[in-house]
Image 1 (spheres, rainbow, N blue to C red):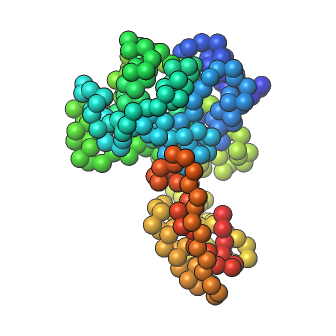
Image 2: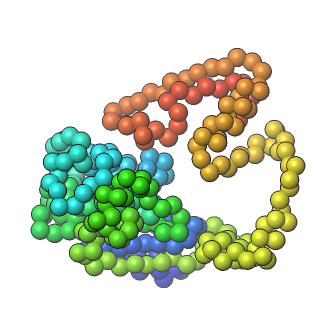
Image 3: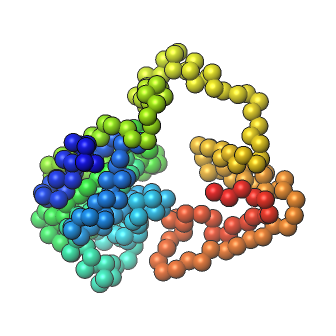
Length: 288
């Protein structure tokens, strides 16, 4: 970070001002490392949240919904917070955390819908300063708008489109009342191969031409079957695809299947589980 002017600037903004900050940049530019260092070294009292269970675990925080006790119903502006958006009353300990925090960090902000950010604003105003966006707390939003998009069903958007130009977080009414800085990190630390980086960037920007596709297709091995002992991991686009492969591979193993049920402590909602509640394995199963 010492040699990166953008990261230094981001640090100074968080440490020395109350200005909201959107920290962005492609994969491997140091966003997660910045957050980790901030948590370790900043004197500010911060809460770290993320839109999904896995993202929250990666960020070392909890989900937005669980922290603010929000339901998954769309948050419709201009209606009271006594609507379906609030599950149940926030307990005294949580209220004290909300009132005393200096900085609210939201990781993977690209997945956060505008109405969810406004629900956060309404909850913060309820327990802090009613007159200020987000109750006067400083926001650090981290993410990459060219990665995961917000999930919004057609029937939800039919309701929300009357209030928002887009489902993305930056359409939030509360955020539009504020002035926030954007800092884009450009140096990629995760890859040093400049040719490979240029391929990734062209795909990222939807500029993949014949040259890019030819380079990728050169590496395609139509009949490739990874040796079992090599421990290859197959990437899929959807959970149900992964589940089919896992079930098939498990069924092909000889021997007895053993099932283990997860222990759930405290308030850990099912939608935030990082793995299946019941894990079934056999001897020789590949586990990541």
